[in-house]
Length: 273
Image (cartoon, rainbow, N blue to C red; front, top):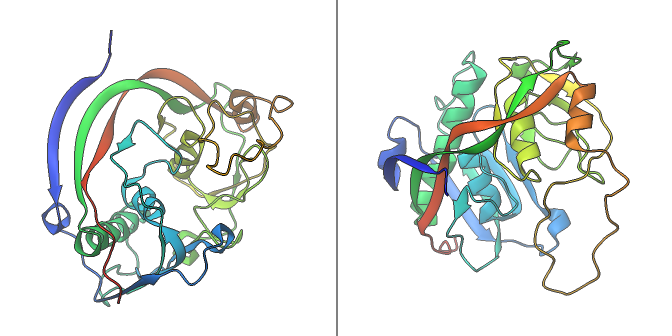
């Protein structure tokens, strides 16, 4: 028996869904100069400017809608094409005023990326609020064991190309929770990529933290590459995410949660510029 309970359905058509947000003033989208996945980089500056190299549309969707990059029941209808793009987008001068709370800054930046997807990729996204089994990220009974980041939010830059950026994790075997400055929403979003259920932040912790853990055994893996190459070494020697989080004074509790579930109704390759 399904436990999915449909609540409210919205059809997001181009900019009306983000009417309260600014739009980029200038956008340049070109086929990526490099086809090497290691060249992929997405950078969002504090003023809202977007600089991206060799990015697939999935990475843009992940940032704009807070969905996993790995295949997830929270995002369906993705296109079959896998082209990557170099993108330069300039935000208007008043897009992200200094002093805004972090949640509002991110909302505005996400709104501009959603607008870019709607305008240049002709994205039409349907969102349904569904109540599903999920993991709630919570503080353990002994309290958190977290180190506050030395980076102030006002100095943060989101940049997937450098370990020194904020709101981003350093890649490693077993996806260790290694980061210079992340919040609990970032942590929940990252873990969800390899969890078998959606992950929601229920910690009520609002600071930025620096974390460093060992890798952990994923609950699920992305599909194997089409090349048919042998899979990489397994993860059976690694601890579970429950053990890793416990050392941080955090835990995952399975419960029901209402989460947005997205369906791509329409998307096109962008016209080159």
